[in-house]
Amino acid sequence: MPSNKIRRNTPQRMVILQELCATKEHPTAAELFAAVRRKLPRVSLGTIYRNLEVLHEDGFVRKLELAGHETRFDGTTAPHYHVRCTSCGCVRDLPAPLHDKLVTQPVDSAGFRIDGHRLEFYGLCPGCQQGDMGRMPVPDMPEHGSH
Image 1 (cartoon, rainbow, N blue to C red):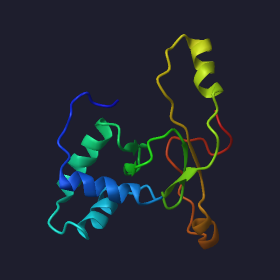
Image 2: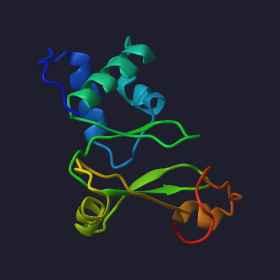
Image 3: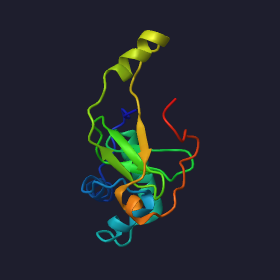
């Protein structure tokens, strides 16, 4: 939920957002830290975490959280789906159209006011399919089909 508070746009925050928006990857804070350090060698990992939280609260960054996995960050805030590799953990944008029924159907059946939704697909990325790295299933997710 975006914050109503206006925050000062620090040089660190600008570089973090630029680096995040410049990649199609969905980096972890540590991966983003490595990229930002090339431009700001004195930046700390704590600064990265704090600024990612501020950017998320202000609606400039999406957090991709899944139990048992490190949080990843996305600089694309427009609604879209993701696909996560069950072996290496990489996350990619899924070029699929959003389906309005996912939003309207729960309203009709449960009486909730829906403010948004999050849907993440999972499977093996092309690299893991070719490398046969040994499949590590995503915790708490069904192995076959959907429920």
